[in-house]
Structure formats: structure tokens, C-alpha cells
Amino acid sequence: MRVTHACTARIGYIPGMQHIMLLAAVLVLGLGLVACAGPGRGAGHAGRFAIAIHGGAGVIDTDTPPEKRAAYESSLRAALTIGRDELARGGTSLDVCEKVVRFLEDDPLFNAGRGAVYTEHGTHELDASVMDGATLGCGAVAAVRTVKNPISLARLVMTRTRHVMLIGDGAEKFADEAGVDRVPNTYFDTPHRYEALQRALEERRREGKTSDSGAGGLTRSWHGAKPHHASEYRGTVGCVALDTHGNLAAATSTGGLTAKRWGRVGDAPIIGAGCYANNATCAVSCTGTGEEFIRHGTARTVSDLMEFRGVSLNSAADEVIHKRMTRDDGGLIAVSHTGEIAMPFSTNGMFRGAADNSGRFEVGIWETTGR
Ligand code: ASP
Image (cartoon, rainbow, N blue to C red; front, side):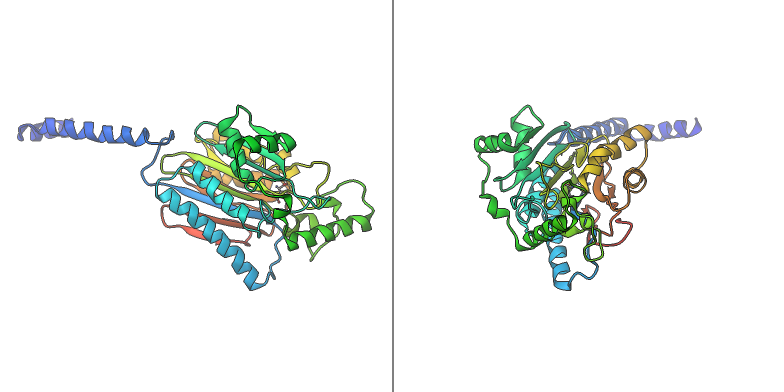
């Protein structure tokens, strides 16, 4: 009471001070409201942004030749730089996710777009999805064959149709109307994925497999790793971002599993499994054995744990990858609405990167914690 009284008394000595303070308060409030009502629909947090990317999880040979390792790291750094710089300029998380995933789709090192793995028939079928955390709008395509950048078609499904997922011939027809870049299926060919297919088919023949168990029905070891966990046979690319307007987005794109058959589709285009974003919680993109990520609704479960149990992003992501799922299933990248980043994986490696407005900028391949 005495303090209040003293303050009032002191203010009373300066004529007009109350008015100046009132004006300042109104100004501060006004600026706050303008910040919140900026281009995004999120709460906004002046200058705060965060981004994480991945290029697939799996058993990655620790004896990878230095020049190959350098190529992966340099591509991850380039992708991360594109995303970080655009976020720093005030770009939206959706634009950043699409741009970064397009870049990774165009890089033959990764299993998405050019460099996608082969189906058992020696062709490529690509899956992708995107989600807007501000609106819960989402779009996905599966088993597309001639779309150069499936992530962009997924975004057009979100923005130009009232549907969430288009597949196969229907998705190709939509691509005709949407006017996205098209390529012959052979555009996605690469020698290293072709060799992986030959090994997978040979393995399948030797095992006399008629049904699938793991990628291409592979069960034997390859370079000491279970083939269906080896990164030569699978992979995905993904990006999650929090922009300076407070909005989250996630994007995921993949060629699936080597020697896949029967129109197999994994988790990457399934909203809630391989991709999820919600401004109230987090944005998530997954990589690994798709069937397991579908079974566990992995991406959505991370968000649900945050929403319904009130846990942090890192404990939610760790619980799903390390407790609910099984070792070697894969990993995920996630960014929370407060800019926290999580990148857990249960394989021996995950191609990944993270950056934020504090100056954090890092890429990695191995290490067990994945942080
Ligand atoms: N999740 C992808 C799929 O199952 C593959 C991967 O990320 O390794 O299609």
C-alpha cells in the first residue's frame, strides 16, 4: 500500500505524467496487437523461428567414404541455409517447407524425387504430404509417377481441392490440370538405387519369397545391417518449421521402400503418420519403416502427447520413438510452437539438420541421441 501511495505521490509531482504513461501503455498494446495480426495466423513472437530437416533414417554405414559423407553434409547444409534464410526474411513456414523439400527432392542423394528407390518393376512411385499448422489444412499425393516435385502437387491438393489425398492415375490427372512440372519416370533413375534394386531382387529370389517381409521381402544382412533397415533401400526427406509469424508447417516426401510391390504406400503421405502440424503443439516429419509409423500414428501422437499430457516436445518425441516404437524403426524431426527442436531416431543414423534465430545451425548423420 505504501509503495502504491509513494508512486502516486511521486507521479503527482510531474504534471501530465499520467497521460504520458497512458499513451505509452496504449502504444505498447497497439504494437503487440499489430504483431499478432501480422501475415500469419499464429501468436507470433518477434524474430523467433526454428527449422529442422531430414534426409532419411536407417542403418548408415559408419565407414561411408569421406567424400560421400561430405556430399551429404553439404547438401543438408545447403537445404538448411535456404530454409533458415527465408525464415529470417519473414517467409512463411509453408513456403519454407515446400522450398526445402523441393531442393532435397532434386538432389539424387536422397530417396525422394530424383534419386527415388525403384519398385519391383523397375519404376518409381512417389509419395508426399504437407500440413499447415495454422489451419490444419493438409494435402497429400501417393504413387505419382511423372511429377517432378511431388511436394508441390501435395500443396496444390491442399490449396486447390477440397480433398486431402489423391493417388495414382487420379493424382496424375490432377497434375495435368494443376500445371506442375512433369518428367518421364526415367528422370528419377539413378545407378545406386538401381544397384540396390538388383540386390533386393536377387535376395528375394534366393529366399524364394512370394510375400513381403520388410523392404522387398529382404531378411538377410547387407553390410552387416538388416537390409530393410539399410539406408540404401529406403529414406525420405522432410522439413518442419516455425516462422516469425508463429505458424508451424511440416512437409514429407519419399520414394518409399526398394522393390516395393502391389502399390505399397508408406507413412509419408499419411497425415498423422509421417507428417503433422498444429500451431497449438508442433510440426513433425517422420522417416523409417512406414508401416510402423502408420501403425503408431507417430506424428500425430507426438502432438497429442503435448496437447493432452502437457509434456515438452522432446519428451513427447522421445517417448514415441524410443518407448512406443521398436529399435531401428526410424526417427523424426519436430519443431514446437515455442521453437523447441527434437530429432530422435532409433537407427544408427539419420541425415538431419537444425537451425534457429539464436544462431544454431548444425547438420548431422550419426550419434545416438539425435539431438
Ligand atoms: N517412411 C518411408 C516409407 O515407408 C521410408 C523411409 O523413410 O525410410 O515409405
